[in-house]
Length: 383
Image (cartoon, rainbow, N blue to C red; front, side, top):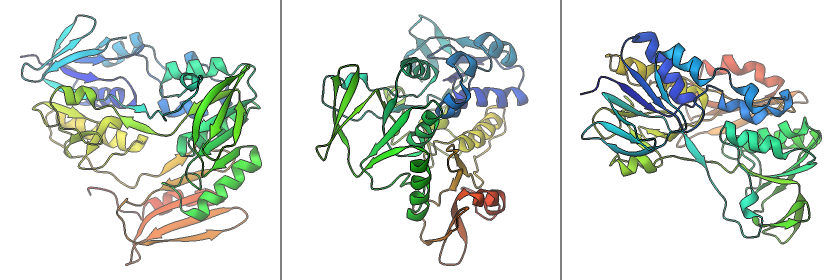
C-alpha cells in the first residue's frame, strides 16, 4: 500500500494544505494533481487585478517547478482524473499515470454557475474562475468600453469596481432588487450601491438577462422586462457550484458539496476534502479564511493528530475601493435583528440575537475600522 498523500487540486485549498502538511511532516511522499499549469497564485486577486495592471503571468507567484522544490512534491500538470478506485486506493489520470495513495484529498474547488441564455452570442459570455479565464478576459478587454456583468453578488461588484480602473463602464444585472442581498442588510446594500453608482457603475436590478445576440462588434442583451442593452463583453458572476461529480462517481456522499465531517473526512476510508468543493458538517463556506482553518486542521490530521476544524469569526473583505466593505455574516439560521447606524463617513450594521449577543456585522467606509473589535465579540462556528 502506498504511503503517499495525494491532493487533487492546486488552487488555494490544495497548495495551502500541502504547505501546512509539510510544516508537520517533511518525509511522507506528497503528490498533487493539477488541471492547469500547477503554479501558485491567489484566486481572490483575480477580481481586482485590473487596477494593478496585472497580467495572468504576473499573478503567478511561484511556477510549478518552484512549488515542486518548496513542497518536496510531485505535481502532475495539465492532468485530469479519469477515475478513482477507493477500494484499491488508486487515482487513475488521463495522462496514463496510476497514482496509489495512503490518503486522498479532494480540493477541486467550484465551477461557475452558467445562466441559461438564448441568442447567437450566448456562448460568448465569459466567466473568470481561474488564471486561464482571467487571461482570456483581460485579452478581450482591448478596445472595450463597456462590460455587462451578470450577478450583483460579491464577485460581480468587485469586478465592476475593478473595471472602472480601466475606464470601462460596467452594468451590473441581477434579478434581486438590491446588491449583495445574501451578505448585507438592506441599508448597507443601498449605501454600497450608491457609492458604486457614484463611481460610475450602472445597475439593472430586479431583472434578468434572457438572451445575448451579436450586434456588430458588440453584443446585445435582452432583459426579462423587454429592454435591451448593448455591451462590449458579457461577464457572468452569478455564483459557484462545488465540483462534486468526480466524488460522486467514486461513490462518495455528496450534497451541495462533498459531504465531510469536522475532521474533513469524506464517506470513504482515507478520503478527505476541503475548500470550495467541501460541505463540512452541513456548511459550505467559499471564502479564504475557512480554507485556512480547514488546511491547518487537515494537515494535523494527516500528520497523525486527528484535529476537527473550528472556525473563529471570519470577516470577509469586499474588494470595492469605491466603498470599503467588510462583512461577517450571521449564521443562515440565526434568529435576531439588524441595527444600522448611517453617517456621511460610513455604515455600521450589527446583528444581535434576542439575548444581545453579536452574531454578525457589516461595516462600510470609515466604520471598517471597527472590524477587529467586533470580530473578537462574534462567536465562531464549531467552537
